Image (cartoon, rainbow, N blue to C red; front, side, top):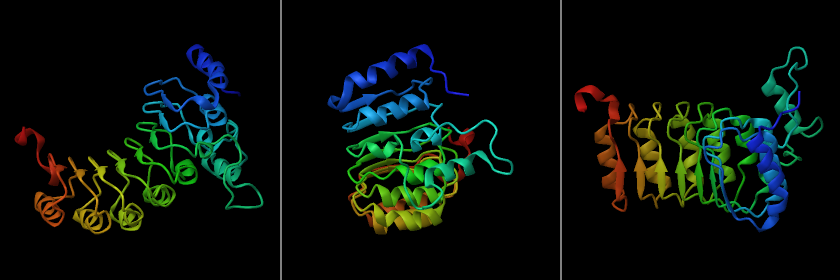
Amino acid sequence: MAELLPPEDASLFSLIPVLGPSLRVLDLSSCVALTNRTLQAICTYLTQLSVLRLAWCKELQDWGLLGLREPSEEPVQGSQPHQELEHQASGPKDPSSQPQGPSLLMLQALQELDLTACSKLTDTSLAKVLQFPQLRQLSLSLLPALTNKGLVAVARGCPSLERLALSHCSLLSDEGWAQAAHSWPRLQHLNLSSCCQLTEQTLDTIGRACKQIQMLDVAMCSGISMAAVRRFQAQLPQVTCIHSRFVGGADLTLTL
């Protein structure tokens, strides 16, 4: 079944070709009805965008970012929907090839991208389309399916990041940061709040690899102690702000 556009999305869909390559900043945050087809139209016509904000566009899915057709409702027997997406994205002959349709990869001028709370997105798309050498600011907060694999791929694809938000990404661990951090020497602002698997090992990794860090948020990270936060700040005196509310699994009732 083809994806039907709600009235408000249909209006935007028809406007996009008119805006053309002149548009530089597009903020569609909280447009919860934004469809994958409209995103693909954005990737087709608005190729000079430097800022794209899609926070809380909760209908966006992997196939939309990858520039693929909508997966069939009845996949081939024995296959899962994510396997079908992988097959479409890689192609039958070259497993390493990149998406060829109107994917997010077409927006190579991007310097800021916000995908906060686009909760249906997974590593399947993020690992393939987040390849923006000029990107300075990225938010992937509140993406429950983002794993270490996706984090490492993003680090390799977006090496110029200065601001990164990954709050409430509960599958990320020290192992992922051990592989990713060295790709982000320019990182200045980092939000890791409520990443419950992280420990002081990640702080040590960031301290060694991200020498320009100025602001760090590890609030609600139950695996990080206040002692570790103090050591981190002592090692990096240029850090001017560390948010560390309720680290170490503090009892919120007693603390408040």
